[in-house]
Image 1 (cartoon, rainbow, N blue to C red):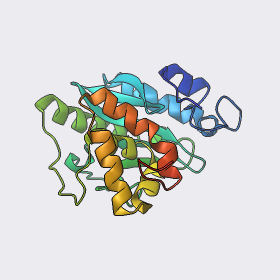
Image 2 (cartoon, rainbow, N blue to C red; image 1 turned 90 degrees about the vertical axis):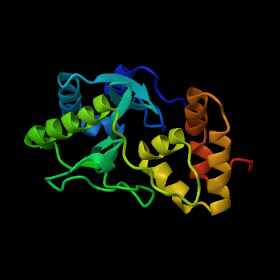
Image 3 (cartoon, rainbow, N blue to C red; image 1 turned 30 degrees about the vertical axis):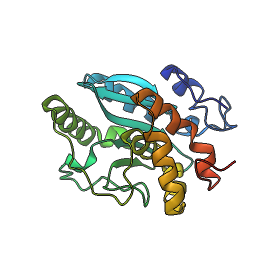
Image 4 (tube, rainbow, N blue to C red; image 1 turned 120 degrees about the vertical axis):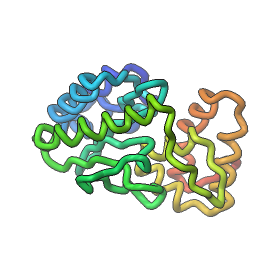
Length: 208
């Protein structure tokens, strides 16, 4: 099943990642009112919107700022450069063992977007300010040098991130090399997206 490329489809059909796509059982249907409210806040703050990795992704000053995701038990707004955020409210949560920093605003009940609107706006504005200034979070030394496009794909997909973390170091390295060996960023991003099924199956890049 192909992930969506038109962001409007997310709010009417879902992300396209599973067989529940465009059915009443899609996770987006559980949270649609608050997802729409969250979208309105992002757009009102001046962020541009694109479909990336099958999810609405919000950008500013040429940088990915945050990505939206819906699951069975919650929905989230995840920040890409979360290490920069001060998080004075202490509301950011780690999405999984592969997350380097707390990076997600997690919502578990309808109506929470309205309740947390001031915090959402404040965190978005802070992230946008860093993007305008060209400030990036400090690089974390990794045993495996990961291409940015693979890091972003994992950050956007907690299930894939957990599966990647469970891979052997050799399999992780195979994906880092396979994705990172492409010269163009778009090609690296496409390779990271296509890697999902094999990573979820516990396989390395060269395994069938």
